[in-house]
Image 1 (spheres, rainbow, N blue to C red):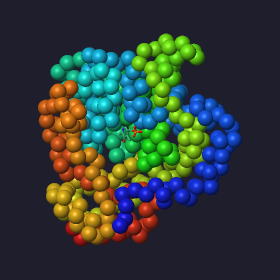
Image 2: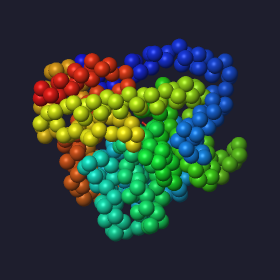
Image 3: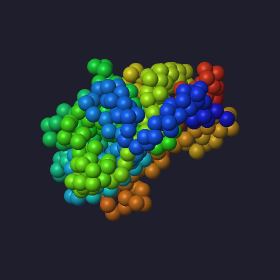
Image 4: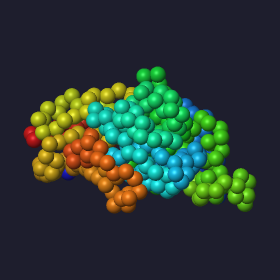
Length: 364
Ligand SMILES: *Cc1c(COP(=O)(O)O)cnc(C)c1O
């Protein structure tokens, strides 16, 4: 079976380097918010083109702390897409805010600027979470001016888009007011455990995030900010991420190469493909649409190709959201939930495996 992803194949070639890096942490005797975290934060800030990066516990915390840094709280309405597996919605609800769902542009699976404009007409919105889904930058050229015009803060969810950049070279995380990243192992830049980061060029938002991730402390044992907690990237993960960061661009290039082969060489009536892509897409997931998903999945499995679903349930239909947000149907979001199918796409796939996936799709 060709898997959708293989972390063993991803990490094994780097095992010796990673073991040496772990050993250095063990020998240092410094395990939380120490020199490796500081070095990683600086390196990742430079990579993304922002002034500040704060390492935190995971990507979901990164989103919530971003919202709290922007002072989102009870009564605040925050716009978000409903096709990104609940991460943004969970963070909004955790802050006491109200998620306001915005439909997607079917061409990109990301927030539709026209749909956002009509949501803005329904009432005040304090912030928007823009998710760069599947590795593709959302339409920032349209979304940003719209948000600026209405004085709306922009949070980028970059958990699937480390390194994606527009034609001017601006990278995911450097467009909005604040951005969240996840280093969950399967992400384009993944640790060997949980990890996340908040990125911003705003000094005040950065300072608030630094306090919020450590009990709300302004100084040791001085709990200045309410809403603080413990959410810190640890030294071990930071040391491993420092080894992995230099590999990110090469991995993204290989992911894109695989995605573009699929887009050029799959010719099946049963599948609708995303267009070939450039630097704006880091091919975190290669997602197609199918007319009859269950039978397509079964056929591909019988030909040795594993598939997955990202994601099958719109946020506003999730049991935990019932009664906490407007659940008016979003047609493009619901069409995606019924039809999306993820094919194997990770840097270590061999050319032969990629050809095998293509042949299987072309036999559907
Ligand atoms: C993975 C992911 C997150 C959450 O990250 P965790 O580290 O798993 O909490 C948030 N948003 C998106 C789009 C993701 O893919």
